[in-house]
Image 1 (cartoon, rainbow, N blue to C red):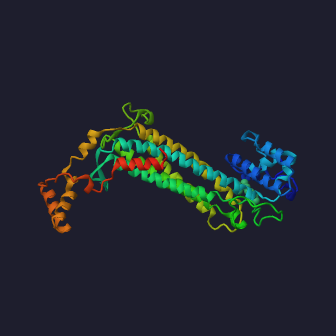
Image 2 (tube, rainbow, N blue to C red; image 1 turned 30 degrees about the vertical axis):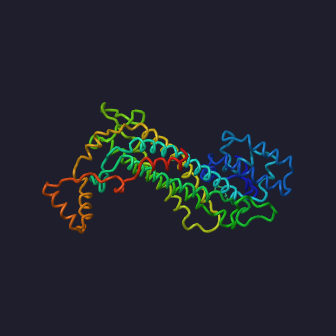
Length: 408
Ligand code: ARG
C-alpha cells in the first residue's frame, strides 16, 4: 500500500486492510473534475509565487495525461491518486488547500456539468413530445379527472402538458447548476490558509460553510427526483394508453419488449422502468438529506457518501430521457379509438350547463338540470363551443412558442 497523504501523522505503519477498504472512496467518476480543480489551484499557486512557471507547466502537462486507468487500490481517493501521479512536483501542489475544499471543488464542477447535461437530455425528450403535439393538434381525445372521462380536449393539449412538466424540470436543473457554480477554493480544511493566494472566481464567502455545504448536490438530486416523478406520470399514461383497454396508441417495436413465454405480448417496459426508477431517485434525495442531517460544521467523513447517489442519478437521467424520447417518437396513435372515446355525449354536459348560465340560469340550477337529463338518459349535447370561447389551448401557437424556448 502506498503511504496515505496523512501518513506522516500515523507513523506510516499502515492501516489494517479491512479499515483501508472501508475508508476508500468510490469516486473514480470524479477524476476529470478533480484534475480540473487541481489545475485551477496550481494556477493560483503560481500566481502567488509558490510555483514557478516551469513547475506550473509540468503540473498542467501531467494533469492532462492522468486517466482512470492510472488509479490504484492503494489510493485512498482520487485526490490522493492525483498527488501520487504528479510525482515530485506534486509535493508542492497541496499548499493552501485541503482535501476538504479540494473534494467539494471537484464535486461542484461535477454537479455543474451534470445539471447542464440534464438540460440537453431534457431537450431531447421535450422536442420529441412537441413534435407529436404539433401533429396531433386537432386530434380529439377525452381529458380525464379521477381517471373517468371528463371533457373533450385534443391530444396536442395533453402532450403539451407533459412538455410543461419538462420545462419546469429545466428550471430546477438551471437552479442546481447556478448553486454548484460557486467556488469553495481557498477554504482549506476549514479556515483558509495563511498563504496569500488569489481568490477564485465566484468564491464562497465563508470557509466553514464552503467545506460543509452539500446543498448544491441536494438541489441536483431534488431536480432529478422531481424529473423522475414526472417521468413516472408520463410513463403511467403511456402504459395506460397502450393497453388493449384504452387502445389510444401502439408501442413502437424498437422501444417495446416481448414476453419470454407469451408470444403475442408487447410490453411497455421502458415506461414501467422510468416509473420504477422514480422510487430510486426519491431514495437518493432522501438518503443524502439523511446523511447531511445533524452533521456538525465543518467537514466530516460522512460527506464521502454524497457522491455515489449523484453519479448514479446522472446516468439515470440520461438513460431515461433518451429511451423515453425513442418511445414517444415511435408511438402510433389510434385516432379512431381516440375519437370513439370522445363520442360519449356526457363529455359535453359541462358545456350544456354553461350554456344555461349564459342564458342567466344560476350555475347550480343548470348543473342539476343537466345532471337530471343525464340520469334520465335524455341529455342532448349542445353544439360544439367555438374554439375562442373555450379554455382549450391553441396547440400550434403553444408548440411554436415552446420550440423557441427549447431552441428547436
Ligand atoms: N474522499 C473524501 C470525500 O469524498 C475526501 C475528503 C477527505 N478529507 C478528510 N479530511 N478525510 O469526502
